[in-house]
Image (cartoon, rainbow, N blue to C red; front, side, top):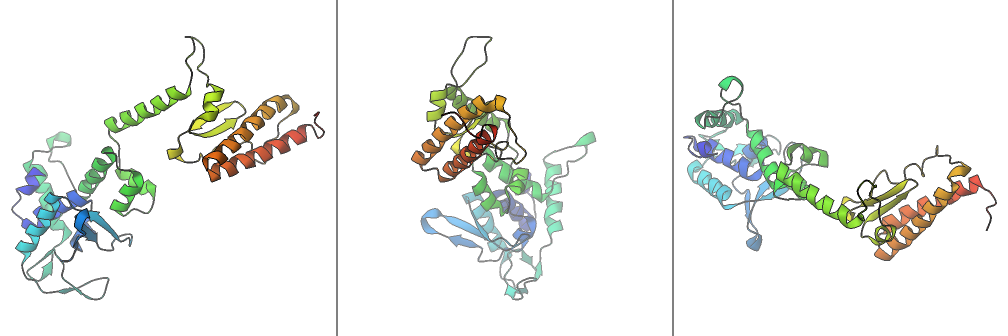
Length: 300
């Protein structure tokens, strides 16, 4: 980006800086109009992104560096005649216009390749590294993800419609993964009791039942899931399956599981977790039906 800032082409210089500072696609960049910057007072200046690839409308906050690049480009551009908008069927004052014609994306791609060469970036065989404008969008997303921005917020900034699209860009660096790992391990240590070396670590049932977790009781163990992760799609999947047929030998385990599930149902109801309460109620009903099938007339 230092080499980009020194490039002689003011349109390429500003355009690449804007992509790096906003995560725009190159098509969205070239469709920007003169009134694309909106001042929202205390929340600062925002870039109104035109409808593009996915027909999603959004606004992106601007930092001082990116805003300065937009202002510099507007001054250099000077007066230009309006041109027909290819999709909206109206005249538009496109920002990236020179000599009465719109700037082509290849001009920015060529400038970025030249900047990579100037910066001495090399790839296989010491050949100049090929860098494309979309990689600046990737860098924008990755930087924000590593700084702790939530996935929904990042989706909104990038104009994505599904989390999978965002995750493709937000490749987390090792410090972020380490932080997430340490946080998870800290939660786990708080939920599990210490046992002598050589023996398995087992959860303290009372602590587990009282924990601020989305808890699942299965026949062979326990699960503690952070509320931020939301409900597990695989919770009690076997007990809810039509093909699950327990036999009499499993009755004690199912009865213990039923008692825990009913306790979890009451716990979720007290915490106001409606979906969790309903989930535990469904599991309890299924377990009751399984026990009834094992022993139609259980001993009181």
